[in-house]
Length: 329
Image 1 (cartoon, rainbow, N blue to C red):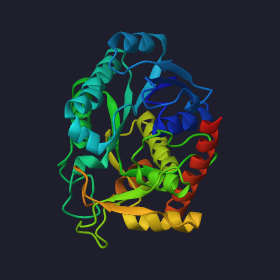
Image 2: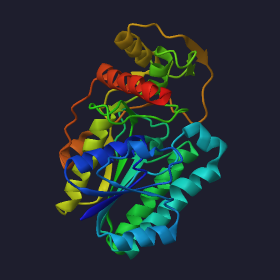
Image 3: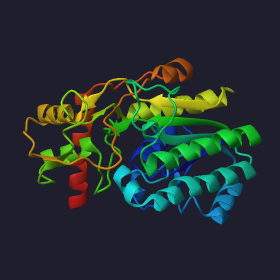
Image 4: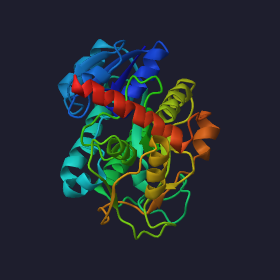
């Protein structure tokens, strides 16, 4: 059996492809390379360059392979961009996901794992936030992902497609073996930007908002190492293969760190003070969001190995150094 990974040339998707090929799985990657890189794809996988909204291409790929599952990472992820371009986000994240699901149903692919987001919760009333909390997204990004979750739920009921939607909190870090990492030049992820600033690749780090209702006034987030997140995907696939129930799971550690605490961690790891500029809030950013992550442990048997902020920062920093050398050649 073979697994179709959409967005498998991107940051998180490329880690999933490595995890699957490391286990001897056959993998086909579908990626339009708009934000991904062909060199980030495991050499053991087959890369098809194309778009998940291309029905003819999907039909051809699904006819050529006997897919055991679809693992769907492809999509747009920048919250402020979604506020400026909501229709673009609904097209890329929702409409095209609908096409992918329709083709999967047509091809009788039995399983579907979806890259969702904690942004579906919006500004939750309590911390940590559990899966029982009613979704209330405050950005088109969060809404576009929630709508895809709804489509999966309804497709499961109508057609029997087994699915798991994993709601990511803040993903950071890089493959401990140094094979892949966050490589998008204009990425907005805090830890990546802070590491680039520490290495002199950016002139300063801007903090977006210092007047939130949090202990130090800056946004509070639950940072999860990308390898632990991928372990949850592997566990989700195993769960569905064993006949486990479909469902939705938070992916985080249950510990929140503020923007200023992340900055201190980067300074600790690098031994370098960061040039920091205090700025205004960004649209669509919740004040605080921390995972209630009991369910993923209890149901999927997930056991994270890298729940340490300094380790996450150190692995991200190592990747930035390697990427800088790569880009210089």
